[in-house]
Length: 160
Image (cartoon, helix red, strand yellow):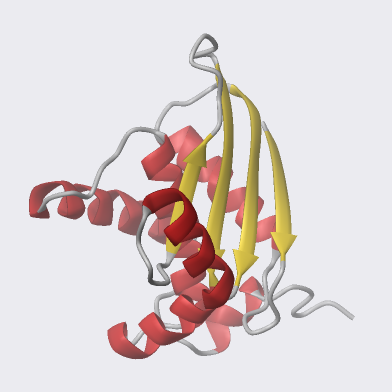
């Protein structure tokens, strides 16, 4: 699986290797062995609001949008674009008392789960997705709160 990272914002540092590892962990946790390509774009609220309106008819920013662009005739392939708002990560980190980095990686997992068929349209489905995401993030040692352990998520942290 080819995974491409496009960091189009500058508010939250993005560790490309950690994003790739997170996406791969979701695939392996779900037993997915498809080939293909997934592009993660990290953007601001203005951009994700524009996409949310254009493709989903909702005139507000959101945390993550996942676009499955695979051909229906090719169920063995996974092609997708996942767009993540760094601004939402910052806002939601304050609300949920987590870190913006945790929120970003949560959105990576959440977007991947949507691509793999998970849904969050009702409370039961939301809880299933939340539980899956929490387990995956715990296996990756991605902390929910800010502090020294979160430094390893930042691009180049600890490297000289």
